[in-house]
Amino acid sequence: MSAVAELGCSVCRRMGYEGTPAELHHPRRLAGGWGRSSHMSVIPLCPEHHRGSTGLHGLGTKGFEKHYGYDEAALLKDTLKLLGVAEEQH
Image 1 (tube, rainbow, N blue to C red):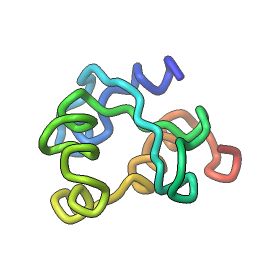
Image 2: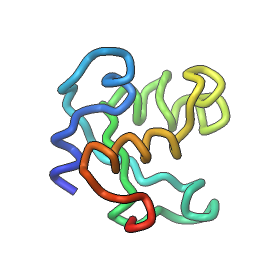
Image 3: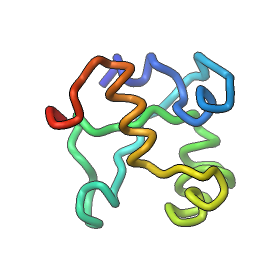
Image 4: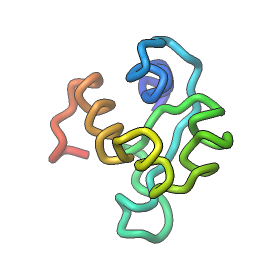
């Protein structure tokens, strides 16, 4: 999980800002809608894109997707690719 946090915020990276300090987000929707996803399925997000008004918890998953044009699944795919992990392994 520390390797994921060291990647920096996934949203900031997509915006061209690499290395933004990140905390870990456990996608709930990818876990079937209840609880948290496994520790292998976490996304690095800066505090704003995680808990802030323009983040996943601030906008909600549908609002986040509408605002940015991508969802948690896309960010998880980016994360796994950067870590060199095949999607079916997570």
